[in-house]
Image 1 (tube, rainbow, N blue to C red):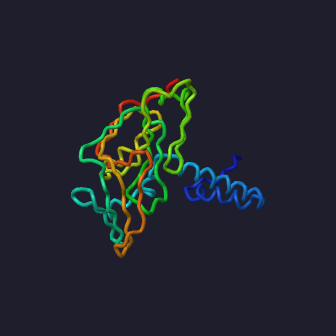
Image 2 (cartoon, one colour):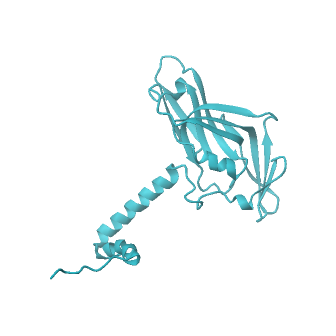
Image 3 (cartoon, rainbow, N blue to C red):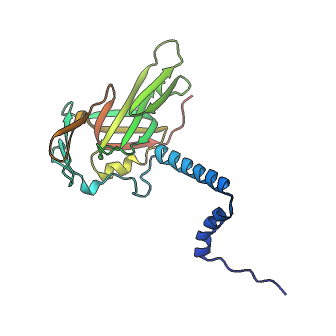
Length: 221
């Protein structure tokens, strides 16, 4: 007589990992839990993703003025954006690093740091780069200063559609990003008093109005 095995249901499949955890020793379970937390944390801070909308900016609550110089939230907070010039700027080249801002509650409508390079700055064999805490660090391995350009963009998307386009950018994509450069973002508390400000130091803060991805690309030798 053939032995009949119990059928697997969705509920049993969902409970299976919990059952394994309950049968593990406390040390093994704690180690596995810490490993999962570490992996999830690494992915959260390294991937250019809004994780199915869970990490997306609250676009429905953000109100821009018609000239995009003032921003307000229902809780009373507000921001004043001061621009460098009226005309648009264009940054074209290889996106060497794409970082989605996390936990930036002071400026909830700023979403990305994207490092745009061209010329020798696009070559990892000639120039190494690292973006950390909204600053770029780079070192070249040539006798003279590299030829080309390197620009770290601190990005405010014009709207949710532009934000969705930014989410598609990956490292080593060939891109063109256009927008109006920002000199300073002044932050006000719920009572309208100045609270803080954001102003980059040598980088390019920008209200992005256009995103084009020309090619996926690969690292340049």
